[in-house]
Length: 425
Image (cartoon, rainbow, N blue to C red; front, top):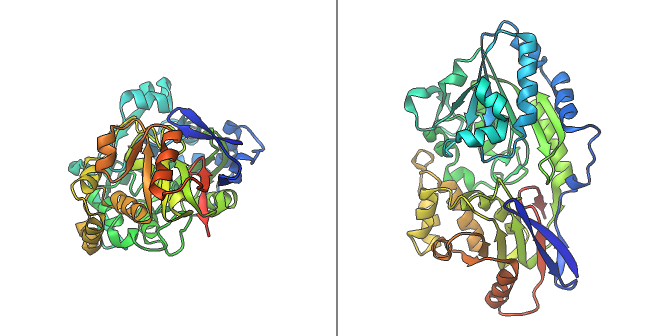
């Protein structure tokens, strides 16, 4: 028997597998990586030794209006560690700087005050100027040019009017942008909805290079990097986290060069070889990334890369915050034929993209490869309407998987954290 722990919400689900049943456990070697310093020292060292850039304190000199882009409530960025150090560094170079923290919500809902306090702590929330980006707040958007994709690049004016624009973030595998972090602070972070839609068009999502761990030739990444440079994002502080959401690596400096160093480190730690099997169990790494079905698609793509055609994916995601998008839900629930929905998406031009289409398109791609059993706190009927099979425990899901496959003797691959690995052939 082998016990495997799967992050689920703020807890972990345990399951004991028969040795002949479990053919592999895919985990990144990042959990074995031992950082040389503690979290604060790692970030401070990165700030003191920026890549391809002057230090943040040097950049801040004589700048009156400084904007720090910060991630929102859906990302486990350790802002309580990063933000105080960034503020300290800026004020070391310019004690009188007017600083605004701009929350990069992308197309997500606005971050609540309680979530801001949880993220930054009361001192920063009570004493710093914070503005929450809204992708539909037209009067706050400025057109800064045309993306390589052909879409208009509209960015929050607070960032564009800054004398110095910098960002915090974290780097993890990303299921269509290659990696998170770096340039993503600008697009989709503080972009207008139409800009995000153009970047997330069906043509780009369908591109073979728009996959986890790929930057070269990835049209989505190319759009994002163009937007970040055009917006004049001068400096980033990005970290890599382990499963406990602790900082184990940090980079700072130029948006492209520092990010590349971070992604190179991550790829070396997170690349795993596929072990094809009948059933693959995956997660979204627990809270906060498994709060809704929308986000959970990411963890499914790791399973997609190693499950046999017509196999079964068991996705564990608490989904305590629900579906995560009304458009996403209706695109799935309002049409019984998933092939028809996919055909409609692929015929759309990039400027015809509708909200949440990209996430639906990827989930449809997963569903065309395997049946998905969704273990969550969601209502069964809602899960079924979204073309998945509901379950509420690993045991129940495995029983259902055997019924679907029509056999008792199944082979299972476990992926305890589906957003932390890059599965390669």
